[in-house]
Image 1 (cartoon, rainbow, N blue to C red):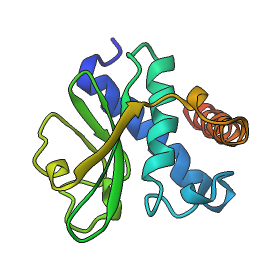
Image 2 (image 1 turned 135 degrees about the horizontal axis):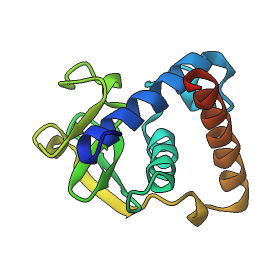
Image 3 (image 1 turned 90 degrees about the vertical axis):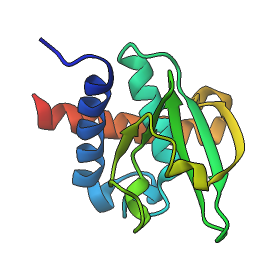
Length: 145
């Protein structure tokens, strides 16, 4: 039986992150080449699409800044925080965070929240993100067949 709920999100996240890491320097998006460093915005949008295509509701992208000036982004879906790039911060409790516990993310003062929908971006950004998404999914399928 396939995993459900949070377990299913964790399963999908593990596969998605593994695909990105295995692509390494071959990632079409430069922000993903040294994942997770500087990848939070792009990986959030890309994984949101993957979740949506796997039957979840469309997540929201949340972006914030903490007192030291560092910015960060993650997605939230039905009250669940999904942060594939938390590992770029040495103080993150886990490299990939899938949690309902807001304590670590609360240090980032929310600056904006919007639907995590690649379709809302301009044509060039949309094209670039969708090409990167297709590359990740193609690589994922090759590794998990």
